[in-house]
Length: 292
Image (cartoon, rainbow, N blue to C red; front, side, top):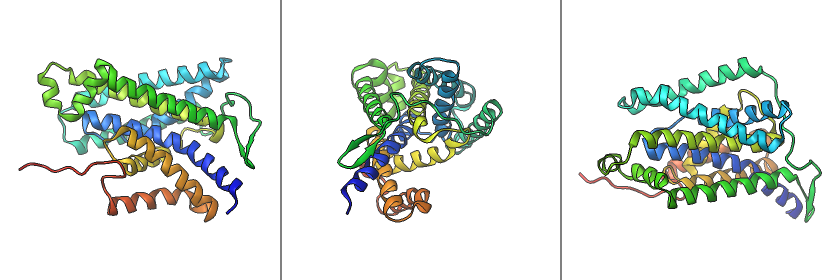
């Protein structure tokens, strides 16, 4: 086995897997607070890349464009929760899931009207001269993707462990009724979960755009792969979902490299099906029992 090729596949897989992981993290944050699978999460990723491209085209520095893109998408997440989820909060779960699918289609349509069907590229953060390591060529942007992903995960861990809002969201994930009874505003926690999920997804989309480019319809596949990563890592485990994204990205890259790139997207869903049959709780999920 060629070591240089293996390292190349690992770096490529970890880079793309970081975005899968951030998308999966957004799924999990909303699921923990609401019990809802938000199928518009992929559109948050798409908006992050498209907004970043738009701000960069205005002449803003790339770093500032990414920050503004994440903030703009956070506002979109808040508007989505206030206008489409909160008014029907007591509806059956399947109704809410259908609403998120409808929101996904709406956002995608609006993005097509705003930006067209062209593919856009965002400038790399620090040049495009490859870095050589043991024979493998690594784009500097890959290091940015991995570093920013780890920084974001560390920031979220601190948020959930050491802030009142983070602990309030965790309380809602364990028992919403008990959280409400002790004075936690469940509605505010739900709103915050959508905002954080949008922020995380948009960041993933913006930092990956210099490598893979972006378009109005990239959110569909990224959302599905993020959901697969969420299942792989364990639905309900935020950092397990992020790890699932990295694992999925590496497996996808190795499969494309050593088997065939024609089946690159198929590997993701084959892995998803295998885990649904063999270990439905995921790698880091816990089996739960219900008292009757």
